[in-house]
Length: 242
Length: 265
Image (cartoon, rainbow over all chains, first blue to last red; front, side, top):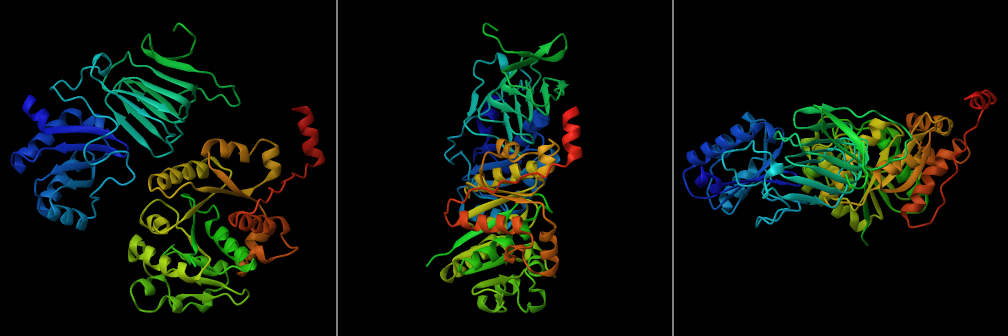
């Protein structure tokens, strides 16, 4: 398992997931690794767009199509292949796949905003208690259609507009107005919290609980924190010393 | 000389992209600029109708891209103005007939001789939209004061920012001042609050816009008829040219009954 974890890294990036693979091992082994990883975390990743970094591994058309089918099986969309091999890039481009991450805050050397902790075969450990769970910090407003997926905590300095969503393994803090959908503790951590300067979401989820905020028009916004209390999500006005 | 490419888009359909494109192109041409309006809505072309040039189409954008004619041959001159041209979309093809790189080539050629290239984008966020923004320098987002249109505008603005084509500017179309003053319609402030982009125009709901579109005479050409909408489009043209044009005050005509009911509420 430890060996596999080194060969496959999954990171949450601006436009979905970046899966980095090593060029060692056979294609069949790569598929098996991907399958094992997706099997484990599939529900968490569901619906994401995937960029696959294959480094120097050459891939032919049939192999890329096979990968595409594999991702579709887990309800993921393969949209980019990042390859060092020029021939692989040409094939990917002919299949209408992207071959670089345009407009992304990620560079190809792997300097990404955030990465998921190495899988240790225990995908359901609450991110909250993992000291190595990283914080993803974004200084921008998330507009409708943006989706942020991250294993650790998420901090947004800006608004989260209606139609945008954040799915985090840990806590979610919005230094701005929260009007979209947030799922904190998405891997089962029911101690996760969601905070916002103006908590006015379409829907809140913590672990397996779902709450719809009462819509109060024309209220004066104040900071709130939502957490699970007595089995349901409660939003409370933030006060110092909380 | 290097012209400016402006794309008019919205995400949601039916908010007035084509009307805005036609009127803006007209208003800029009336200021003496060389303008070409380009319909990127391949398969669902409308801009020709709104500009009243439908019956003069011989070649279209797809003919240019596929090399059946020269660019100049597809440019239909609007004889009511000095320098206003239309490049129509093909009606019998679909969005895949043109690629983003085709659009860049066409626009770069147009830039040589035109001051403004105004692109009418199709609704949606797929290939047609990608085509429409491929070569753009400046994006105008059209929205209506309704929640669904604003939501789609927000999505589009996000996509434009991701493509590094921003910052986009906003035009709010079909504003009914009376409904806004009664609190039944999103106000301009509400919309700006959500979208957080610069406003360049507010167009009041005006039946003359529809009449003009049906007759192929954009309302921007009118002097007295539909004066406020006509003025609104001409103001946007001025702002695009860097003038500091104050926004018109859209005053609601409050009827006696409304006043009475507001007294009791």
